[in-house]
Image 1 (cartoon, helix red, strand yellow):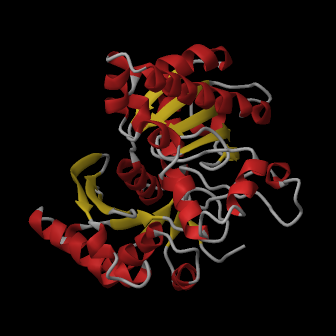
Image 2 (image 1 turned 180 degrees about the vertical axis):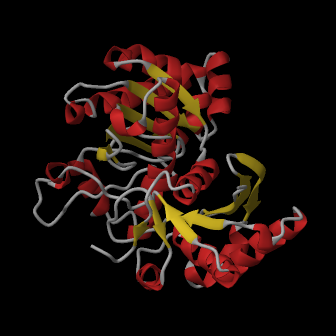
Length: 354
């Protein structure tokens, strides 16, 4: 039997659409949404029809017949903590997403369900953004009112761990990995036999091309109360205007490497610091796995940089084999997750059930 799976991944400035026939992509397309388009809407969920229409138009342009689809899978959003893996979209999930933390990924389930339901085929989400499989001890902080949550690049990190396990002749469920997703945001995760047991979130570890990463709290408190920033302005500083961008006025690693080649000493120092902090974060994930690590995986956009991957490998390679799997492979990860469910190779969770 041939399986045709529509994958939908809504992001803050784009909607990615793909159709896979079994494991092969029929097409993959990124639809850019300029800010002047999205700012017309009061909330993220108000963008539902707008984004869905783009998905339908893309399918028409690619001559994909809806009636030939087997399933639709969307990016999982900011649900209450759930396990990793696949969930069938149901009314309870959609109701919870209406009240969830606003995030573009929340639209994945809505668009998938709206296309799949009239066709009588399943709609899934897979490896949701807020999937939480952490050790209980990993959630504890020194402030009782604050409990750590597992916000990470779950979808791509798990997909690359599965791919690495296959390369090594094993299975994801039988091996341990440290995965560093290094892109505009950086998260580092410890994977123990098919489960993410600990994570360094993008605000708690290395700085990135545009984010601050972890900063000593005393200095952050001083800036918060300095009167220089509103809450939004300071959050924008941390999330969009820090890291390499704050020092070098660009978040484009290709430009930074060109600056280094031209003898820019600040660019060289900052790039070395970036790699140093990534390696340091990888080292922090070794104790959760008791040092039993089958491989360290570098993925995300920055993993295309031989400079960064070389420096990280030099510092963290003692932990185990370093496997570089660059890029964000989320569309493939969504489709292959749905395919495993359809073929009975993986069970599907029912949202809202114990």
